[in-house]
Image 1 (cartoon, rainbow, N blue to C red):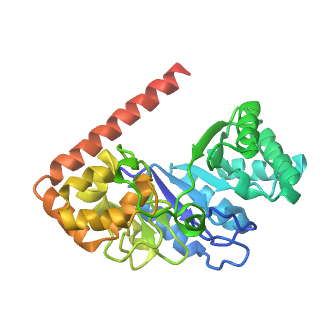
Image 2: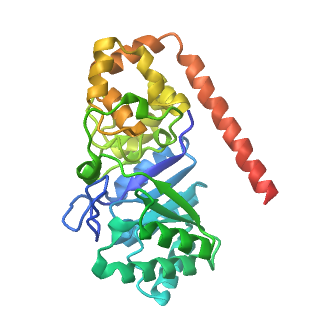
Length: 337
């Protein structure tokens, strides 16, 4: 499997305390990566990833580190991206100034998170104005712009985000709230029917992330906090070992299976008692919940590895083929444009 994007989680701090935050970020949260850690990780990972994403918490609370990371990414010939809540776009002038700095540093893609969890009724109008100012400034550049909405899609925040994206030529992406971090308090359920969990491949497992705690995961969100035995937790003693960890994970049959066919495809490898336990541990009907329920269970991991033994080369080869097809599709789409 070829990794897509290395996430650099600059800080746990955020100016907001969103109810669905998967990383439990807030103004009170502590923990930051240092520049030596970031530089070591990015340089080490460069041969194994296509790009680097600067994220958090709120990455722009560590503006100098964010810009420096973007510059390093560009110097290594990698694609750079950033996720932000856009708090810095307080006016059209400020939005243009920050966008200018990001572009000058070498940023290729800017994603702004916007949903009902990002504003209270008191601050609703301010947040809407910030979103519009940010997108308007970004639209004057060659940046790839994305608006990311998380939620059920039945609120006015969805309409605001969708309309703003369309108005400024940004891509609009949606996602469901997941039962991890503070999101657990919003949608935690019991007695989930395994039939609710969707089939299909997982693209998130190809987006590893380095956290301020020095933990390294093969998945950019739901894997955070996975136990030591989990295949989603990539073992490193320092940030400079990120590349070696990715090299080992690229041929891990469990990670490749999740990437190729999704966590649900691993259920057949489980004995009935283990499968029943995994099902009981589902937090909701999402693919991510099932992935964690399986990979958090040490016996389940052992059973899946035993079933895949002898089939490792085929699983990895399928990943390589899928990556080749994705590249061809991207190149074809570029030519059509």
